[in-house]
Image 1 (cartoon, helix red, strand yellow):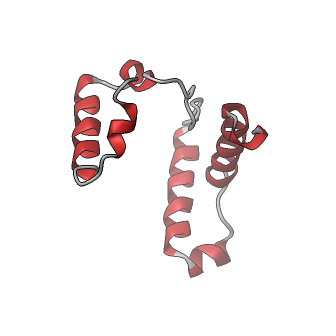
Image 2 (image 1 turned 135 degrees about the vertical axis):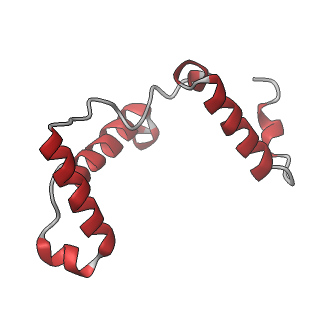
Length: 98
């Protein structure tokens, strides 16, 4: 249960993203991987601008949290996408009573 807790996931995921996206990958890795080359450019640009993220990748993990954090337009897009992707499934009926 420890590894499925929100606290563990937040520290693991946030730590991973901080490590991955706060430093410029070595030049030899950039040469071999176009994704890393693009990442390096984004990191350079962010450092040049002095931007710094203070957010958390994983939110609080509470039911209904999206209604607080997302705009009406974002919620509509999200709900439309969920309906589209689950149209041939009854998976969403699992949450009918919530």
